[in-house]
Image 1: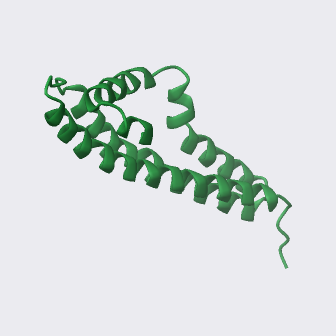
Image 2: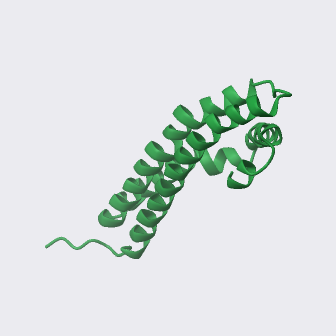
Length: 138
């Protein structure tokens, strides 16, 4: 997105509209929407098989990704993307600059939050893997 900020704003809007239109595909759906499901199923399977501590970390990873990856995207970024998709690209560069400025900064902020949350979810799942040894009951 930083690169688009340096482009002509009409080009940036057009490029982002094209990217957003192409993102909903067969690769995107399972990678994005099924991640919290897979983490939850993994947590349940680990718990069922006696791996209580790793199960906790996988459940935590799923919760973080669900809340700050999926829900955040659906409530913030998707509505912004849909509004941009409905925007007619103005011929006037200054008007386009205002549209892009209003969109880009906010979108990038929330995208960075999603990226951080996804990294945290990955770290939690990695920690769960590192703790993968049967819990001992004393």
